[in-house]
Length: 117
Length: 109
Image (cartoon, rainbow over all chains, first blue to last red; front, top):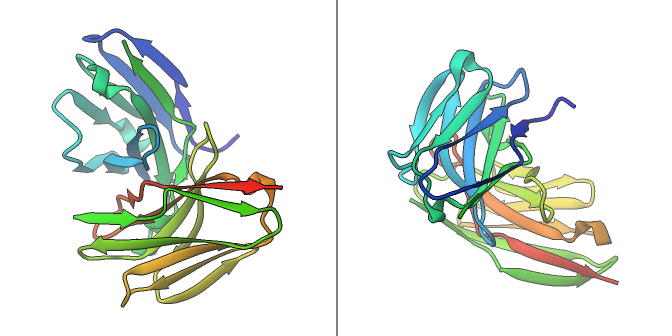
């Protein structure tokens, strides 16, 4: 399978704990995005990388959230001191962008469902 | 900022045609995309309109009118497997996508 993969698929944690999610994009893709989705809503943008550089972060991404993409390959999203409001599906997507139009076709992974108790 | 509005639910009969509308308010609008998401699944890309007009991909077509800040997704020959949520999304300015809240399509026999 050469699609976007995410690990773990499910994570249950207690409030106040730290969690880390991993995303492996499609190998030739140069852009990687993180989104958050809650029930009945569309995905909400969190941050994106161009190769290893983090180029944009949403206001949704509080100081408790940090993302990395070392060497421009896989990415990790860490949430520190989790809160119940962090419960959501965390989606990773990737794309290969040469022109602005191509950025609109993003390939999503299956997501990591986080439940904070 | 950006906002995209779409109906929350649509029901249609198998074999029929259904249109899902999307109106948007954005600054620096740059094209409208459509994504499909089955329950428990990942969003998958359906189509993208950079310019006004109709784009056709098999049973699915998408339309954009920039002057009206409006677009729609047209699904023909509906099948039960088309039951899913459909999201319009805009990639204005940067490469991030802003999604609407989604339209849940139910296809009934």
